[in-house]
Amino acid sequence: MEIEMVLARTLNGLSYGALLFLVASGLTLTFGLMRTLNLAHGAFYLLGGYLALEVLGTTGSYWAGLGAAMVAVGLVGMLFERVLLHRFIGRELQQIIVTIGLAFFLSDLMLGYFGGAPRNPPRPPGLTTSMEVGGLTFPWFRIALIVIALLVWFGLWYLVNRTRAGAQIRAAVDDQEMARAVGIKVPLIFMLVFACGSALAAFAGVWGGAFTGLEPGTESQMLIMALVVVVVGGLGSVNGALLAAALVGLVDEFGKTLFPEFAMFTVFAPVALLLAIRPQGLFGKANA
Image 1 (tube, helix red, strand yellow):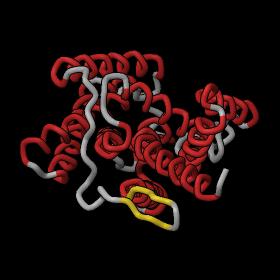
Image 2: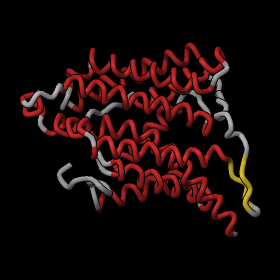
Image 3: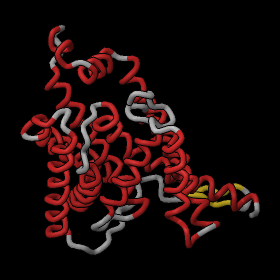
């Protein structure tokens, strides 16, 4: 392949990986860090995209749509965690059943209200053009997606590893009884972290909708890819999720280019091989 083609494919893979990281970032908080398996995460992604479109159509403001979607989905996640999900902390099977039920419920609501036709949300203002370098043309939107993924990565890494709130979150997950004994409000922390993860799913849905479009079934595809990123990166590792998302994005892009008839195989075969060699993922702990 020509150098321009290789560079274009690399940027496409990294931008898709950036989107996967944005989706997986919320799942890293809820599943990787809190050990709460939220299979409704993909539905939150799609709901965020749809809500942003509705607000955009009403107000004409992209940023109002983005903010409203994050707040609304964050509140849905907070309510769900406080009313039902907190009863099943540490009980994975019950978490799977409850969150799958919520995912089906939200998917049916969205199908009934928004319909089944694909929608193509607009790109953010100022990111509708492309840059040209030599013979390469690449959208500014995709470059911004990579930059935003890096900013979200740094924010989450700093929160988890360098703040008192992050220390409290880790303590609440590792030993709830001891955390309660020293005055940490474990239920409040779990509720807020779950709400934050849900809001990040909505954020990814708004940006991802402009990348891949929105339609019924998108939530399942994005959930599967986000789970792959979280597991390959290592549970609870923000650094691992970023690296895994970049690798999955690149493998997916070059796999579709070189072996289009084996597109899914080229993604999941390396993942299966890696997990067979290193079950804890790239940055996961051996006992995770």
